[in-house]
Length: 251
Image (cartoon, rainbow, N blue to C red):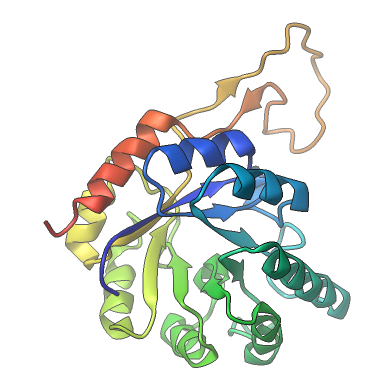
């Protein structure tokens, strides 16, 4: 695809505003990024859309875990896609796999039908597929606009070999967007090794300390590995630096 693009991956109003203010071309709005992201709330979407002009793509993911969904989960996803379409979302970010690790064309097609004219990104369910080139061909046939991928590695920087091959095979048919671990220190290297000019990042540098003064020890509301008193937010300086690098690629 022509041009450069930086997408801010955000799960709060504060992070969305930080990314929008500092060069984001598009937002991927999620909830619960600490567990990989789930579908955000309607009120959060409406707040962000009210207060910034940046295009918003919405993650549609009903739960943490694999991408093999039940009939009820798929019904929930379809209704959420319709809701965000009616609210004015630019696009949706989805992914459904078969038990054999292939892109589930039939169920993806049903969800894409609900999307109507919205852009559709195939999210990192792609990185869990058995054959990435077959999955990319299926995404193209379905009409997906973008594939978000780390190159089936722990991070985009580690997945550069496959990312480069995917980008070459994609040509102008679909945009390959590098995501996972993208930061100012590796964008240029990823670009030089792959030719990719679309990047997806949270723009985070580290946790922000909670404002809580009283802190209860030994009690966790979720994953014990995550502190209740650390907040993860987009860092304005980091995101601005990432955006400047991405927008300068190829100049």
